[in-house]
Each structure stands twice: as C-alpha cells, then as structure tokens.
Length: 432
Image (cartoon, rainbow, N blue to C red; front, side, top):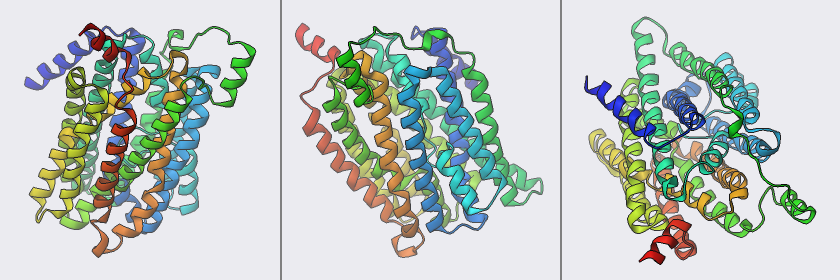
C-alpha cells in the first residue's frame, strides 16, 4: 500500500513540473534505459569472468566500451540537430541491441571487443552513449531558467531509482534462476539478453516522440555557419565548454576506477558477496543517490550551482576512500551508502550549470561535447583498474585513486568557475 502511495506521489510530482507529453516521454525513456543499465551492471564483470576473461582483458573491454561510446556519442550528438533527434535516438537504441546480443551470444574476445567498441553498453550502471545530451538539450529549451535545475533533479532522481530497481532485479533474477536449477553462467546470460531486449523497447518508445523535440533556429550568416561547422556547433561559449570539458573529463577518469561493475566485483572478491545481495546493496545505493540528486535543487537555490557541486562532492569522495579501509562487510556497505547519499548532488547541478552558461543555440553541442569528455575520461581508467584488482595487494587502490583525483577536480572547478554565475543567480543578486 505504501509502495503504491509513494509511486503515486512521484508520478504526481513529475506531472506538477509542467512537462509536455514529449517531456514526460523523455523522462520515461531515461528511466527505462537506466533500469536496463543497472540490471546489467551488477553481474557484467562476474559474467565476463565466468566466460573465461581475465581481469586485465575485462579492463580492456570496459575501456573500449566507454571509448566506443565516446565516438558514437560524438557522431550522434553533433548530428542530432541536423539529421533529427528522434532518428539519432533510434540509432542509439539499435546499437544498444547490437551490443547486448553479441555479449549474450559469444565468449569470443574479438567479437566482444567489436560489440564493446561499436555498441552501447554500460559497465557503470550510469548513463553512456548519445541519449543524455539530446534529452538535456530538449528539456532545457522548454523550461524556464528558474525551473531548469529542478527539472534536471527529478530527471536524475527517476534515473537513479530506475538504476536501483534494475540492480535489484538483475541480482534477484540470477538468484531465482539458479534456485530453479540453471547454471550461474546461464543465469547471467539471461540478464545480458534481457538488456538487448530493453534496447528494442527503447526503440518503440522513441518512435512516439513528436516533431516538437526537433530543433528549429534561424539560418546563421555565412561567417557564423563556417565557425559552427569548425567548432561542432560552438561559437561564443567555446572557451567555457572546453574548460568544463577538461574538468569533467578528469572527474570521469577518476570515476572510471570505481565503475559499479568494478565495485560489485570488489565486494564479491573481498567479502564473497553473491549477486542477489549485490543487487540489494546497489538498490539502496542508487535510491540514496536519487534522493541526493533531488536535494541538490534545494541546496543550489540557496548557495548556488558551483558551490553545491563542490561542497557536496568533496565529502562524498572522502567516504569513497574510506570504503576499502573498513574491516568488515557491514561497515564497508555503510560507507558506500553514506557516500551515495550525497554523491549525486553534483549531477543535476552540473547539467543545469552547463546549459545555463552557454547560448541557447549551443546547448546540444555543449551537452554533447561535455558528455563526450566525461565518457573519454571514464574510458581510460578501466584498463588500469583491471591489473590492479587482479592482485590482492592492490585490490583497494582504485578507491584511493578515484577519491583523490575527484577531490583535485572539485578544487580546480571551484577555482575556475566560482565567479561565473548562471542567469538565475545573477537575477537573485540583482534583486537583493
């Protein structure tokens, strides 16, 4: 009864945001996509190890997965406004199906590399591929400056809840199938196949988007057109976007050391935690992450977007460093959950800030380029993580590297952007 009431409250809250039918559909596709990512991430590394891949090869595979997503995102996000947003979202869904089918069908490393590089698959449980930049730009153009951060907070909250439910269902399904007599490796393969099926559902959902999601803007002058082509859609805001991209890439590089699949594998190796319990742990973690994302809008309205990003991110990274230092499973899980309870406050604020400090006709490009920078950064670290977690003496090092580098990113971000305020904060200052 309480579950239905909470679900109704969430639905009512989203409706009260004043979203158009297309906006609500984009919320739905985001939630379903993140469910699929969370569903897969809990068992992905365990599955790859069971089919015979070494930790070093898995790390290489994850790096190529994220690197391939970078190339795909660059192609799709920069072409979306010209070719069509719906068409590019459908293309991304098809590549998601392609990756899921090959991962489920073969243990051949060369074919898995092909699927990882060309297809879209999420070892982290979080957003990858071209979907997010296109959706961000579409949402930003239909909401006011004052509502933008709140919209992104709910957008991330529902995504985190979906990831949490996906992790819970993915771990629980493998356990159920094993109790029914299925071999562990086959139960993992069922989850991978279900990920491919999720890509098909996304295709069907994206076909329901109306033409209102497509961009329309005045024809630029010849000189401006040449500049836009040269800089992938950026003009006045190119220095801001490139600086943000460099910083976001550092943050994502640090995060790549502790992908959700890697952390799940770490708990499996360190404390012999099985997939069903891993699903419960990451269900709780992602629910807390979603709540933290929603809280971000309230905090940002009081202290500003940049301060919210930095002042909540540093404590979460200290907690990340503490996870492997805990002597038992209970305390390690407690540190992880505490970390997730504040870890995502920088996500909607980061997205909202990027959309706020660039020109409206640069938003698709800015979202795509900063997103690609994050994916590029995240793609480099897993290849280093594999050899580290393969050795018992270095098993904890990825947590230390990730937390330390993320703190450096926070300090650099604050120094570089504390004086560049979004329009709604300038308005508040003027009113005061």
